[in-house]
Length: 91
Image 1 (cartoon, one colour):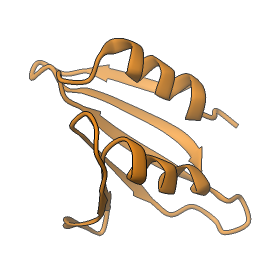
Image 2 (tube, rainbow, N blue to C red; image 1 turned 90 degrees about the vertical axis):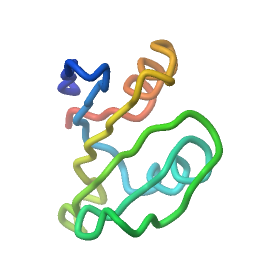
Image 3 (cartoon, rainbow, N blue to C red; image 1 turned 120 degrees about the vertical axis):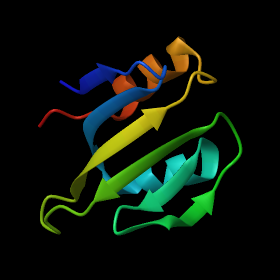
């Protein structure tokens, strides 16, 4: 189950495990993707609601990675829930 944290700044942080293929879809359709090693250089900026998610690579064999997503208050709650249900993976 994804871990969800509500911060005082109205930023919702969700940590979940996703397949690597999802990262490309996210970058094209939803937000700004940053490499965790260098958050100042986005891989791709997509159209849509403003949020940033960072990731670190997991094993090549698992084809999954841990993703930390920071949604700001411009993202509707139903979009956040959709994202977690659609792409979250607790395995």
